[in-house]
Length: 202
Image 1: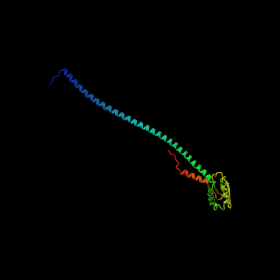
Image 2: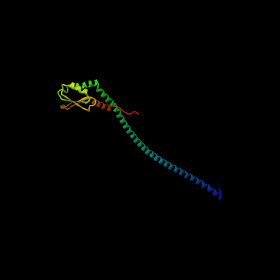
Image 3: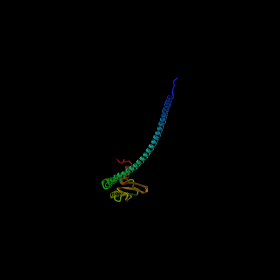
Image 4: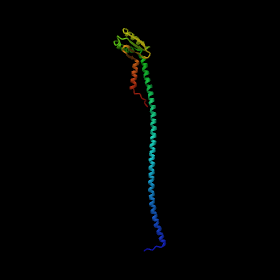
């Protein structure tokens, strides 16, 4: 059996205690590292969740603001489109009105009017009719007086008729026939507005 003196025993126990202490310290350090890493991971996950929640919130706000801006732009664009359409339509029909005024002074207008008056000659025979014409339309007035001279009729001047033609009324039958250029223009306006594809090119 080996014999240890007091100094050797002291050094032996010091080494044993140091080894045990170092071992415990390593275990403790590993446990601390594990706990530290676990908590750091948890904290980072919480931070990431909060970041994503905040980003989603901010993104939602951006989307709402963007949609509002789009709506405002859309409203402004629609308004501009409507205004532009009105301007273009007004120009188109202003040109047509100018041409109608010129047409009412031509032989072509006489031919157009003659066909319509002839169409009613037999239909109004036996009735008293009132024929409305423009107060400026001497051509229509003369043609009616010439063509219907054997029939019962009277001519009334109508300031609402701007371009030409006539409105024929049979009071007894409650019949009114509109054969004015004004009515044809309104029909064309209605058709044009319903079928035209007016839009703004960017």
